[in-house]
Length: 377
Image (tube, rainbow, N blue to C red; front, side):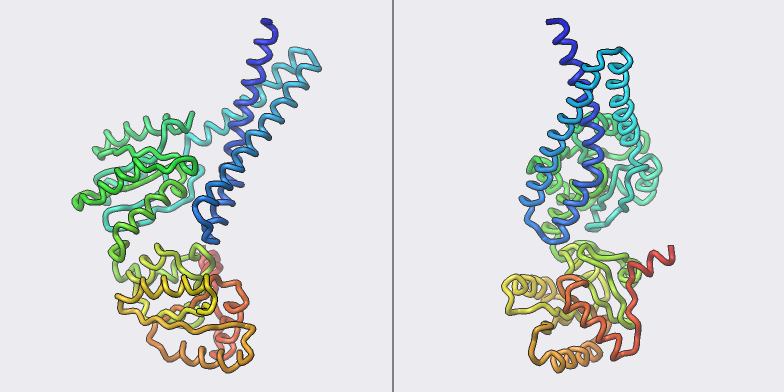
């Protein structure tokens, strides 16, 4: 009986260490890839959540199977050195991962993103970032870290509390769990804070990618077209300094003429309504039900602005494609600049055709701003 109890403890220890290590790898790669893919392709939130939960289920199954194999090997060998190895190796891996996660600056590559005049979102603030936030006039930090995400988030929460006291920053806890909760209570806290126009908030989770995205969506919904009041100089440089949009790379076809994927609502607010764009030309097919929704959405967003909006259907299967394309190219060169032309993404046949034909007619090589950005860095 005592021996069975001992073996159960060993197996559970191996499983916890193995599960924690594999869980970290799953979070940083498969989950990250799936979430990015789901958002790029505009999947409903329930499908994103379902995919993540399936990956978690797969993780549990794989970690159990691997832990059982490790446990059975050491049982079969029945030697102390194998028992030691089967417990120490998983522990060292788990401890290494924990040490890494307790130093978020080594993992986070996400930059701050201003959502409104009051709110900026980003990753966990190190002491260096906390100092910068204080100097930039931020008065409060909203933490979305959750004490249930053990063992590292409770530790980081305690560290952040000490830093907030040191730098006299108001720390507001609005704990969230991504994918497994609706986080309604915490979103209500954010909604209430959004009414206080005298504070400037920095909102963060751990990576600055998932939980803050829920906050960003809420803030944009609450602020509407008032979101992201970027100064004109910054706005005018936006396209040249962006690597890409969420759905693909940005292209400069000629001075003041850009080709982009269909923008998200946040990108509409940040780079169109708060920018210097004069004309937007949508190439999506208004006879396609899905495209109709996007065209209508874009019209509603831009109708109260000074931006001209036009919809030219470009369909590679059109029997009179050559003439349709020529009319479009002529129109693009005549409308007020800067002009943004877009389809759903920049790799579909219509997008590739337009970019190619525009370059041929205007004798200018299109510049992929993503690749151009990388070349200069």
